[in-house]
Image (tube, rainbow, N blue to C red; front, side):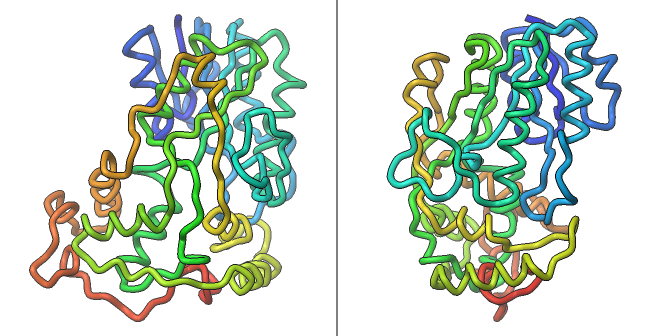
Length: 331
C-alpha cells in the first residue's frame, strides 16, 4: 500500500504517518506543499489537515473547504483507490441522551459541527471513483490540542472555572491511538463506511487535576453554572465578526459541559483496532511537556518538575478567571 498523508505536520498527521510507515511505503505533505505531485502514485490518501477552526467564527459557508477540494481533485487525478477522511464525533451534536451509537443520526447544533458534517456530505457526493472511508474521532488527549492548551494556561495562572465543575463524562482519544485507527481505516475499512474512534472515558476535571499535579500547582478548579456560561458565550458570538477568534463560544461551552460518550464496538470489530492508551496517567506527562514547550523560556526539566515555590516553573498564580466565564476574548 502506497499512502499519502495530507497534513503530515499536524499532530494527527504525525501519528498516522508513523503508523503507516511501520507497515507500508508512505509519505506526507502539508497544505503549503505540492499536493498534486505528492499524490502521484499513491493508492491511499489520508486527509487529516486542519480545515475549520472551532475557536473562530466562520467566514461564511465555503462549499467545500478549498484544501479538501484540492486534495480530492489531486487524489482523483492521480488515480488513487481510497480516500480516508479524519472527521470528528462533534458532528453528532451536543444533545444526544446517553451513550451515542455509531448508527446515530448526526444532530449538529453549532457552526463548527455543521461545517464538519458538511465536509462528510460533500465528500460522498464528489468522491468520484474513490473509496471513501470516514473516521469520526473523539476529543484528542495529548500534545497539540488547542483547547487543552487554553485550559492548562488558565489553570497555571491560578484559577480555572469549568461549566458544572468539569464533571461531564466524555471520550478521550490519545494521539498514537488515533494514528493507528486511521492506519486501520486505510488498510481494512469498508468502502463507504463511517467509523468512530472513542478512546477511553473520563472527565475534564480528572484530566486537569492530574495535569496540575504533574505541573506542581494546586488544582484550583471551580464551577460556573451552565446557563450563565451559555448566555455569556452567546453574547460573545453575536459581537464577534466573521473570521475573528471567539472563545469561549457556544460550541466550547457544550463541549466542556455535556456528556459525550460513544459506542464504537462495531468500529473496533471491523477494523481490528482498539485503543492502547486507557488512562490519563499514560499521557499526562507528555501533555504537560508539550504545553510548557509552547511558553518561551521553559526548559524540558520544567515541563515535568515542580519549582520550590510549588508553582511549576516559578509561575505565580494570578487572580484570572476561567475563559468559560467572563472574559470577552477568552484570555
